[in-house]
Figure 1 (cartoon, rainbow, N blue to C red):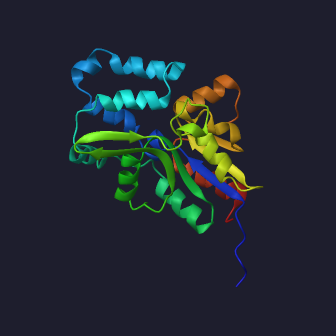
Figure 2: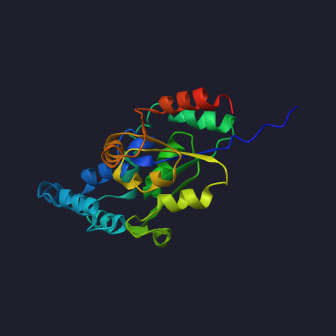
Length: 227
């Protein structure tokens, strides 16, 4: 039997609103932060400060998690309701069959990423994110990669791409949000939607639009075939 050739590709994807249909972090905060705080516009101001650069994502997450009122079991019940974006399971299978490394990069928290992946039978997919756990009923946050970038993000996606990239490999990145704007700078091909697509358009960064992961599978099949 002939030895299977290396694909020469690496695929990195955002999690919230990309792998999942909804932004999980945002849903957690709008669900479990008390209504009187949300109604007062506090959360909107926090997000605006993050997007303007007044707050780093680490500071933003600490502020948001500090307002959460929930238990571990309540949070898991909420997470169990969330669905993956169409085609992600098929993309994971395609990458496995074609030896394309697939890695999730998130500036969110591993607590919900790990739970949701396991809930859909995808615990084998590696990911890099910030860390969250419950301790004596309290939410504890840790940022193991916060010193790897410029400080704007708790988890520097661009650093992960650079450190994991194999020389000569073609990097494809897919995302939907503001936290992806640095990661795309070191990708050869960018798939973007929503806020990331708007950012790319405003800043002259080439991208391919997508609504689900079947678009990316079709691109890989068309350009690279059964690599």
